[in-house]
Length: 185
Image (cartoon, rainbow, N blue to C red; front, side, top):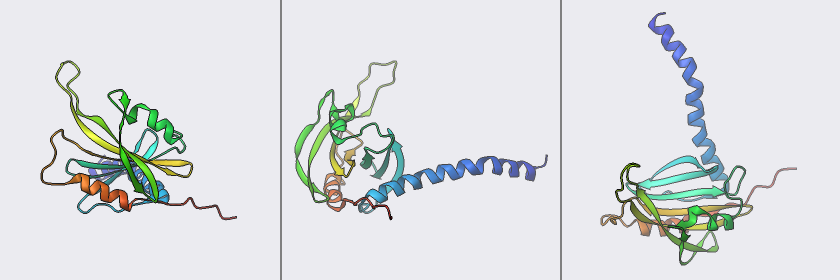
């Protein structure tokens, strides 16, 4: 076979895979866009993926991260917000996350929680130390589903050059749950 034929075969074999990879984030983005709207903070990037069966947006700038996760839908690990709050993902070293106080998100008063999350773990064969950081999160009801919104900085040493905490609080003010569209009869 000549080079042109090889390239044509390669293209035909990989084109469906490339389309699927590109299509998946678009489906996730669409699912999140139908359920809520928010403003992407200035100079931040946005990526979409699935997390335990839930569509999730990861907003980031350097080591600062805000996650928008829609839970309670089909295939979700958690069917209700209460299930999430007692689950291992909402715990800190086996204990319930610390309650930090309430804040208004999408016209609702929600509790902000804080927990420790691992930033780095030692290699499996060594007994080296793990590094932890703080994560703040809240659960926002959205009809039969709910959002888990969270903020963390990916280092145990705070960033003196950027106030991610301030951006997180401003982000919560922009977040809006959208009413589910009723099917047309």
